[in-house]
Every structure is written in structure tokens, then in C-alpha cells.
Length: 318
Image (tube, helix red, strand yellow):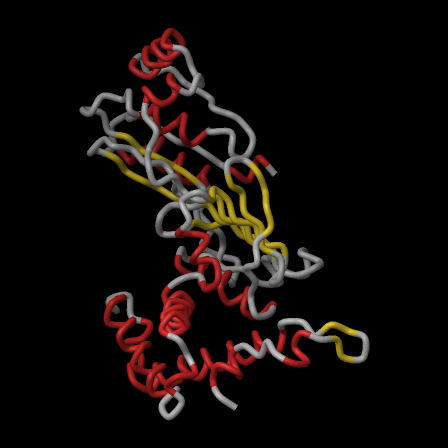
């Protein structure tokens, strides 16, 4: 049987019903995933520990993956079209360097949120509307591997003892993950994508979020060093509003941001970004937002007063 048949059997019984039960895509997915695992194993043999190095060049990995796929189909060269080979190369690279099947969704600029309700149900939000996708993970283990990869990059953990975690992607996108036993039907993962373009003052006025008069009032409050509380539900624009208000802080001021998950994008040059940290597996090492505020408030005799832009704790929203 050729590789194309092994990766995607769609003829004969695959389109029929066996014993009254329609054959699903599990067999096709299994063959495809097995081929990808074989390619992955060959890559490990070829590149060794370099395969997971932070310095690994994506273009070099792409060439290596393509070469390994060529070796894997040697003698059966026509079993994969050029389109199928390109797709496999991208999928394998996404599994190694990225978030597997979620990578195409992350690259789609029209998607603002990704919601995973178990390994086989993935939804997205586009233009404020939630819609299902045909994206799926191989199984629960595959989904857990992706969740572990996300949280480990920011020094956090998720396990049965601590089944809920907040994290962020390298681009600042917010992540919330919940696993069993809290997630009864399988792991849940939500990614609120980070806006590629930072909205400015003119954007808020043009969208009708604020009027020029109210914006001037807020500007005066920031310059006058007044306390401002920004509150709202998920996706209501708190971070966007805070980013805009922070642009009113004079550049000769030192700014300190304290967040449970660093998301703010401040354009001033003199900025210190701090992020809270949960306890490690031994239950030690936790640094709360309160600890960070207390540390900077005390000052130790060497820190001058400064605005605290972005004192935020999202856990209080739940």
C-alpha cells in the first residue's frame, strides 16, 4: 500500500458504513500521525538536541524536515503530491517549534480568540462571532503536550495538584488552561490573541469609545498623577484603554508595570515590567502582586517614586 493510501484512505469502505456504524476519520488520522512521528524520530537522530534548541533556524529545520520526508517516501515518490508534502512539512514544524494544530489559527489575523473544549472540539471567534473549526488534536495526550509547552515557557506548571493556570505566548497573547480533574470532559484551553497593531488615541475617538472631551479629562488625570481604576469583563478593552492612557505619561517619568501575566505594551523608554509568579511544585517560590507592590513601595532607600501603570490581577475576575 502506498504512502498516500496510508495517510488518507478515502475509497471503498472508508466512505461506507461497517456493521451499521460509519467509519470515522480516526484511522486516517492515526496513519498520518504515525508518519509524522516517524519523521520526527528521524529528525531526532539527525539533529539530536539541536532540534529543540532556541537558536534553531526555522528555515534550516524546514529543509531538514523536507529531506527526511523525501527519505521516508523513497521508492514511493509519487505517493505524495507537492502540496501534501508542503502541508506535512508545515505540520511537523508546527509540532516541533509551535503549538501544533493551533498554529494556523494563530497565524489567521481574522481570529481574535481560540477556544479548545477537549482535544476534538476547537472553536474560534471572528468579528465577535464564535464558530466551530475542523481543527483537532490527535488525542488528550497531544493536547496536554501543547498545554505543557505553553506554560513551561513562562516558568509555570499545570498538573493534578494545580489544574488551572494562566500564561501567555511570546507575542503576549493571553492563555488560560484547565485540565482534569477540574475539567471533567478533558482539558480546556483558551487563547485570547494579542493585537498585532496597537490602538492609539485617534483610534479610540474614531471608534466612538471615548469623546475628545473625556479623553482630554483622562489625559489631565494621568499628567496630574491621579489614581485611575479601569474595570471590565473579558475582552471589554481594559488592556487597550490602559495602553492608550499610558501614552500620556511623560517620557521623563519612570514607569513600573505589575501584572499577573505581562501584556501591556508601553512605548516609553524608561519602563520596568514585573510579573507575579505562582508557587513551584514544592509549594515554594510564589511571588504575588502584593509582594511586588510592597517591594517597590518600600523602595529600600534607592527607588524614587514612580507611576505604577498596569497594576492588574485577572484572577479577581473569575
